[in-house]
Length: 259
Image (cartoon, rainbow, N blue to C red):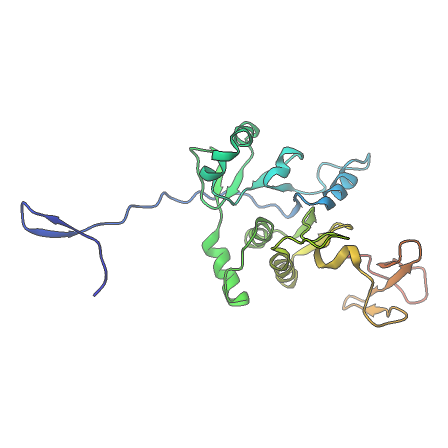
């Protein structure tokens, strides 16, 4: 027998099932950016300064800038991802939430709380969770950065540049949890057609310690399906391998994309 809460109507001798309280309707932000910059809070966020503090910067380099949590305090933002419950967060960060209300940009969160932040919007957890479970065996959304990448996949973002998403750091034993989750979502997004670029000094995908393909005294040239060639070339002054454009050399075009 199904376990259903009941209430007794003693006056008429009836037993009436209790109806669960209706959840408020979901509020989903309507936007369709094609290229996004995701700006997080790790030390490689300084690469974002280098990318934007330049006379060659153009305002349409991306369609939207997304910030994670308190990076909104530092950078112009079109959308904020604040996945922690807004009611609980406001209790110990009231000044920040006054700022969020004043800034006025959309805040995507686990559950929209318009009474706390009027311009807050629900995360597409059902659709994104259903996308994740067949691949990972579980929703696998254990931090806001991964959730922002998954959200970008869901709404059809074609290209994303990620800054400041660092979970481990050079010369430090401590590492934050969540890096594997983010890297899994980066991989899934790439397999499904999104172009994801990582800033040079991030630890994601081992970018900051990229020493080329393991085991080769000389790095091989990898011919890509589009006819270009990718090759790491060691730079003696920094002691690491980086991709180099050698279109003027004998083996043709070289992709300069790097993780």
